[in-house]
Image 1 (cartoon, rainbow, N blue to C red):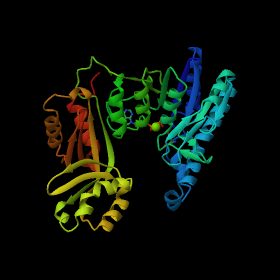
Image 2: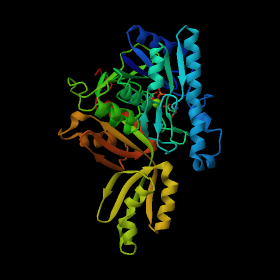
Image 3: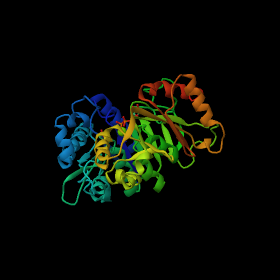
Length: 403
Ligand code: ADP
Ligand code: ASP
Ligand code: MG
């Protein structure tokens, strides 16, 4: 059986017209000799009736904080509705289909509600459907735990469902359909002349995804990379060839930068080490204490006189409480944006950071902090400069031209 996993995101299944395009893609796959296994997200984006964010807006903030089990049940409804609507429209066209929740599709997770990890995938119902020449339509972003409760896999998690199905069903490839032509040099909503990247390495896509580009979930890339599963990002609404993700990327590219992305709502924290004498263990253990409280930090710089790092704005309240309890004083800058300039070909090339800093300074953009790795350079800027910074850097590195 030649299995193809096709995942359709929220905008792809949001209207009857768009779902008709989804059906075209499924029929095309069948005609090419594939057995399609379809994964769907909740219909639409924020504001639309059945989108995940809309479902979340039905309940109080207290429930969201205190009852993650109930929230997962609520969030899972969006994808479940999608499977049934999609099945209905396929059957109307004479194509046999079977809607399945994550649990019915055999996706078993741990108990970590809101951000569960898949422990086991038993594809027997899916295989059964395929043998009967029916198309399994599976609710993305969800599974079931040992106690039979529904769990979700973290926001954007339908991509993870697709990658895991690709792995466990030994699929020939996984196609992720969305509302853009593929992975672009920058978010096309921010940079008007952002350009499609036709071929890119798993590693670089992981950087994009991990550093804020929503187009694919980083965990999905990780799974595909680890198991060498061919991954393609495509547009439901066009016939564009999309972005092929593989081990090498496009080896003929000479541009050292592949693209730019960002993560908003970062808070820069500075903790002075002068407090160390009075409060030694609390200061020295701070990073461990934050980790124990599930606060993830990055852009970490340790100096003799201070410790600097950034956290996600959504963790700030919790962070503030911890610091009060530890009796540690800190200063902070909120609403920062972490711009990530990505390119595996920049390794060993001198002057890239200098070029970035010059470009931003020429635009009167203050760089608050920087960091670099072999494939990525990060610059922390004030949130209000996000779009200006990305556009300036995109132009500086000629990313708008044909790649
Ligand atoms: P879906 O609902 O299909 O999963 P998402 O909203 O999760 O779609 O992801 C698609 C969005 O990702 C696009 O609409 C685009 O605005 C955004 N995006 C951010 N960075 C990039 C990038 N580098 N290339 C393509 N899309 C990007
Ligand atoms: N509907 C879920 C979300 O909005 C999962 C997904 O779309 O992948 O996060
Ligand atoms: Mg998504």
